[in-house]
Length: 311
Image (cartoon, rainbow, N blue to C red; front, side, top):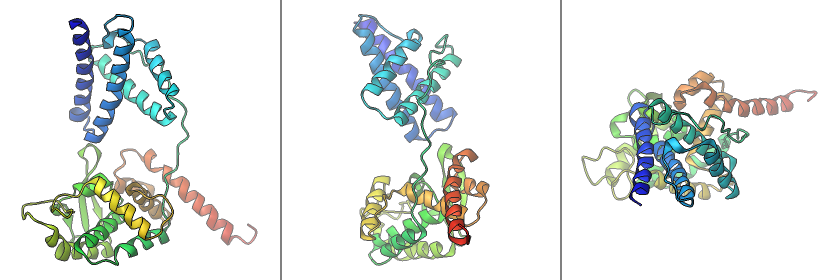
């Protein structure tokens, strides 16, 4: 019994060492590390339970390809989506690569494991008219929290920042005189993003008229505050966005990420270079940004069909 508990702890220790490597050495965000932890702990629990049924103890250096394949087959039987299974396979492959390099595992059992084929889905976007409707709807109220909502929407659509980056902003990150905002993306990578004059003015109004009424602590650094005077959370922003979309009668599904996708797509349709959009979005690879070119190509085809006399 003690040996089994010790083995189980050693499995979790191996995962924890890998997670620490991701956070400290590779600079992964806490959300990404948490996702890896959930996936890998789920695998460890399955492997332990499976081996316990045969009365055996288990450790990472005892895991073979057959055992991992059994786990992924079980996920299929439980109706996990191909996208989710592919993500879990990627997490397991990454961990075993780490364990092999550290000498904790002699042979990598994931080398023969392949991910399910997944068609890359195009990001959903709003039309410019839908964005205008959403912003106009948020401008109809004049209470402090309504002014905050409009400022957040304007900034999100003006910069394309992630919602996690948006709610993490502090007052000092905003430079309205120069017209830009500083944010820290994945891996704590800093980038400076310009803000167009209209969004700049809305933010100025929020800082001057609304935020002082929401703030309860003069030492609070957060740019966007909730009614308790504390930093607004991602969940809080998602709820207010959902409410505003309902008021604006926008039928398209809308999330903070949809606004980010809309920002990128509308810039590219307006002629912005792909590399420039990549920098604004904070994408490490240009291939991540290239997914938006499919949307702009579709738009160009529609415009061609409308304009060409023989189309």
